[in-house]
Amino acid sequence: MSKLGFIGLGIMGAPMAGHLIAAGHEVFLNTRSKVPDALLTGKALACATVQEVAQKADIIFMMLPDTPDVAHVLFAEGGVAAGLSKGKTVVDMSSISPMDTKQFAKKVNALGCDYLDAPVSGGEVGAKAGSLTIMIGGPDAAFERVKPLFELMGKNITLVGGNGDGQTCKVANQIIVALNIAAVGEALLFASKAGADPAKVRQALMGGFAASRILEVHGERMIKRTFNPGFRIGLHQKDLGLALAGARTLGVALPQTASAAQLMQVCSANGMQDLDHSALVRALELMGGHEVAKT
Ligand code: NAD
Image 1 (cartoon, helix red, strand yellow):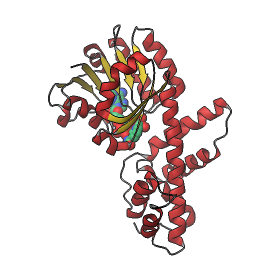
Image 2 (cartoon, helix red, strand yellow):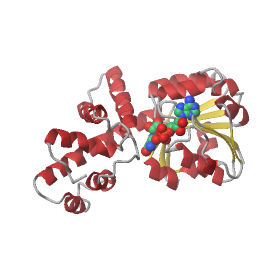
Image 3 (cartoon, helix red, strand yellow):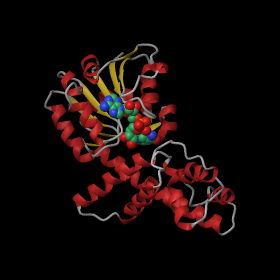
Image 4 (cartoon, helix red, strand yellow):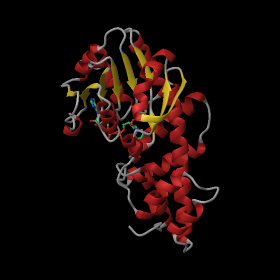
């Protein structure tokens, strides 16, 4: 059994760490608020600092909100880097900047340690079920070493390429998801305003070429008005920001991504940044003066 660390025990991190603990590993835990009591079972132990996690564990997982959080946890005074010693592995499963990830990996490598970027898709449901999609960037040997642990948390596990490529893959994922949510929102708003029952429209379309996981899950949320997260608008805005910043650096245009980002901005401007990203439909509803279904 390995000595593992897990830093960031929020919506995603808590159930993911739970799978590692349930498999019998010694897991050293830290999060900004209190480590949830429910996780302190088996060989799990709460640590007062992230440095202590890095000192005690051989493989240190992180599941934090954004790039500055990962930079802080890794490199601030008393951070993970201060607790690392040669031969350890840092695995960042947060969704953050691909470019900054390459720099973080270099700094960790300079300490004689491996770095894997391993963001996920599948949401809270996938985290709880241990069925996440995990997209990884980093060296083959480190990937093979950590793979059995990824298999406790996910099902579709792919080594995409070198450091940063896992995060690039995740940004691509977030572009596809955002544009699909916008498409489903526009379709259901159109159908509802035209007088059709959006629930019946969704049911009919689920059998055809327009079927998708987004129509199934997010479409249902739009109709039932269940906008509790799930995946917060504010976090998806962060991901589309990474896409648009990357596009600018690379010199490519992402017009639909820019449009989806603006719709999310409408939500945030109206106090909805902590709702599930399916609430993007609220921006369309505000502009259209009509709700898909009664709240
Ligand atoms: P969250 O806000 O629920 O959890 C983040 C956790 O990080 C919190 O528990 C917080 O206490 C902890 N944290 C923040 N700063 C810290 C610090 N300095 N030291 C220790 N702990 C710290 O967020 P989440 O929804 O779990 O998302 C985490 C990451 O996973 C994000 O990058 C997000 O984009 C990505 N993600 C989320 C989902 C989803 O559906 N929620 C799906 C896929 C990917």
